[in-house]
Picture 1: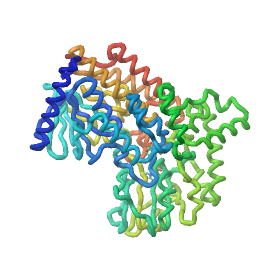
Picture 2: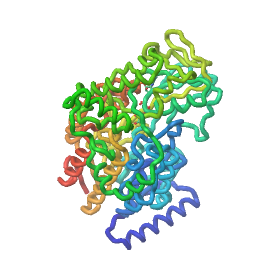
Picture 3: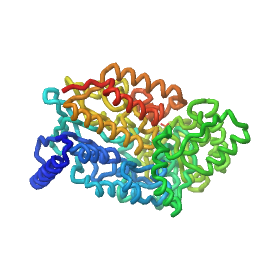
Picture 4: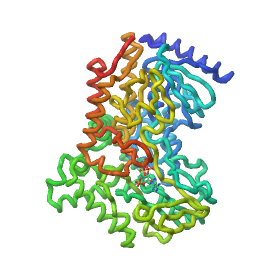
Length: 563
Ligand code: NA7
């Protein structure tokens, strides 16, 4: 279906459109055949569709489990939910027109505004006609003889395509801990990542929140505003820096429009894809007074920029310890009750070794009369009872609502749930039994023509996601364009390149403090039985981009391409 001819593309598009209209009239028939299937209609799925369909002229079907597009922002509607990337960088950069016409209202947008943005993109580029909603992929098997993927869906349909591209996000499989007694609970319980669309009324309710990761730190202050009482069950205490959210001024909005090129260059140059650069100064190269002044300034600025105060915060334990001391001191100053402050400041890992949260009044929330902190590291939860939560030490906490802010089976959960089988029936679950293994986070030996957007082994969650997504989607699209041009039909990472890449992923992680957080979803440590492997590539987005570009320039070195 690929052709350089615009005329051909147009005719082909008309053919596909009439096929879809016909399909919609009599229900989708079995065995629909495409050039590519994309799973997921969030940031990555939308852009992958646009690139393959409109730039390469491929027939593409996007399959999306939710009833609307939006990916993570469809599911995460919990109180206080906000993006932790600055809005002017949490968007696509591929279209100048799109950049110029969209206006964010706040520094850190919430789910409704991000969903409006994604719908605007989907409408502007006419993407929705190739997205099938309410359709969960239940299995995806590679047919070796036909060199095609067969994707079965929960409504019994089968789709086939030469290429299968997963755009399922890194944090989309909710983790509800297997606590005994949950079935017996007489109140309501919710996981933050599967929040009811109509919201939850906390007025007059005794609420228990389990979890103090980025999500719990965002939700607790908002829940506390209306609940009659909030008990926060903390297993691992966490750092947090004020987000300093607020409306964007007209001047700032103008600055964004007028400096699009410069902002994008910064995002592409920055280690983590954010619109700011990390300082080149070591935390150890300045006097204690100067260091304190710089930390104070970063604290006042707020947000993830704090991590950029010094160049070695995530590469040197000694440098990191200076940030740790500053942040713990802030907690002790903000929280009035000394015992609560000590529990909150009893943090067992280096700063940023777990994903660093940013907040609005998190620590201040513990100064409210209706909020209590329970340390479940000291006294673990034993079970959920009819009336609430009981700890091993025998303490009972009567509750009307339990909020599980307990995170996700990150990075691999959604891929493994999809029942993917490659060559010779090899299941992804078996291939990854000891942890995820792939090449560049993009491809897995034994799974030809399968691409994983922001898969484990890529910078993904350590990066501002849209930047990571655009790079992956464009690399995949260029690769497929190359294959079509050269008459090649099959691409597969070699075992050797995969081995080599995994060694690089490990080396990059070990050059940082990141693997030192024992209870981190980066390591899969939050899911019982999950192999402990540091999953994202920690070598930096800009460096990773260059590696991927070099691989492509060297004729897709490390992959086997064949006709
Ligand atoms: P996280 O960061 O995985 O945090 C989950 C929290 O839930 C964390 O504090 C966990 O403690 C806690 N947790 C999980 N299971 C339990 C049980 N069984 N008992 C007590 N406490 C538990 O998820 P988030 O949703 O906050 O954030 C995920 C990402 O979304 C975030 O990093 C951003 O990238 C956006 P633990 O630390 O495991 O001791």
